[in-house]
Length: 586
Image 1: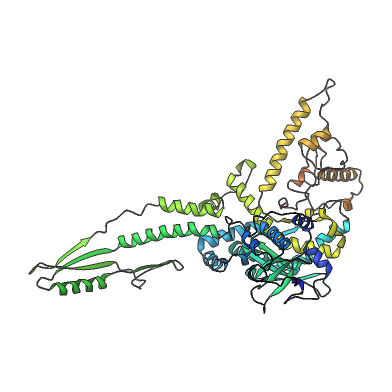
Image 2: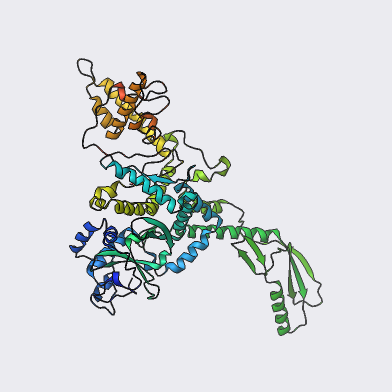
């Protein structure tokens, strides 16, 4: 950032490389959406933030020596961005580091780790969908709720994610390089998003125009010929880590050290076995009568002839001795002897040294590498097929729970590739959403998953809650033999049913009542093909019903068979996962 300087009164949005016709007022507002509160706070902040450079304050107002971000407000706004994500261009060592990361990413063990993580995060179903837009709460207009799904599907197809491989490759780039960046391309009327162009994140740096208070991104800040200034509404910038010094640049970076240690032990063990496999022959040749100079010359000649240069090729996994890949079975060593008139002596020698055939050390370093990968150890059990699928919540190991949390964090970072364009497109279609801060909090996507983790956890908790609710209802009774606790209270506080769960269950009960009377159900009132979450058959649509429901069409009543009351205002807004999915990432 410090290498690109602007004149004190020069507006960033009118500089070189600026697309003058593009930056209309609406897109500027979208670029600052969600930052208005921060802008007000920034103007009232006087301390130097953790992500700010204290040395730059000594040159405030010095256009020649100071950084181009001379404005205090600009410094504060940039520090807000750096608190949330890392910027590759600000790390001067990243150019060389990226080469190393990519070099190690093709190693067999590390490549397998990357593929496993990518397969867990991005899972395509039969329709080549790895995620979908989550439903907005009922408080939003139906037109807006439907438009979210319509825009999401359009962006998903426009970005080429429906080919079943593009999103997976983008995620691998993020895991390897630690950064991915894209330009959001609009049509001529700046109304619709039409494309997504991949950029080199190393060329981008965030900035802020002090006059317009607009967040921008500068591409190639050090080269005036290539310099481009783009609004934040044009850029998707995703980083694996944050701006802290102790953070990891990418998923590959912490794997390098244990990988090198493992390979060092493997090479030592291999070379030991190669040396032990050879037969060593020792020849002692008398050189009596030779001068000292002649004897030394002969010794040096023997040293050059029998010296071995052993090289290990980590890429090919081969060993070469003196430049040849052919490993000799017999090794001969010739030594001069000062005795005169003696006879040559030939003997077979055995190399001395520690026995390196033990696998204990090798296994330790291998486990250390697997531990660093964060993949559960049970998934490396190739003999048993990489572990078993869960049959019950009690079978879930703590390693699996930690691994699922790690996958969720990666999804939280990676989801910006669709969340940001979707947010922008919705604001272009409905400008009033610019003032609706509740909209951005509820706009989310749900990732597809083939894991039963969330479903089994939900069902297990539901079973335990129902047992507790049954015990409380039967044991706590008044003098008339009636349950002391209200069924409404049990449903909401013990079973943890939300207003939407209760309302949805009521719709199923109405449909069930209509079918029993021989009348047509209210298909239009509810999407019968779309369960509301993991274990949705417990709320309706299951083959055996729930909570007293009977028969194939029975969707059951609430706990105990009583009619649930209508949802009360002020209830908790529920999430609405899709079939086979897991709960949306908050």
